[in-house]
Length: 70
Image 1: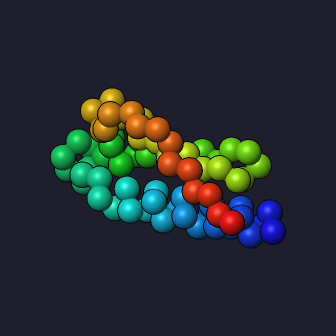
Image 2: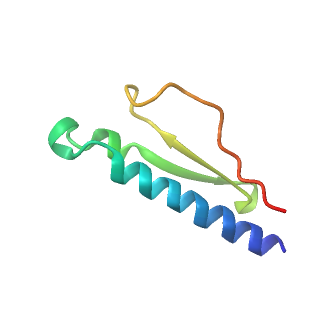
Image 3: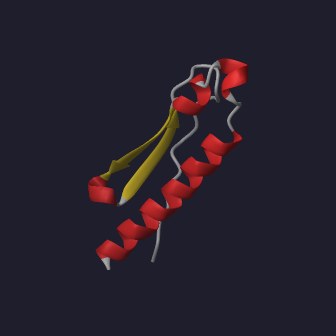
């Protein structure tokens, strides 16, 4: 059950990350800084994933998206 939850968290985080990178401006606009600043941080042994954008001009900080299954 825990391994399935980890897989769902990973799959969902990768989907969100991929869409964020895909929709970030191209390197021609900002040298790729925004796209390159998007990261995934897995926590709690893989039960939590936080997608963050490090570029200071990207987005205002919002609470982390938590994916809860079950």
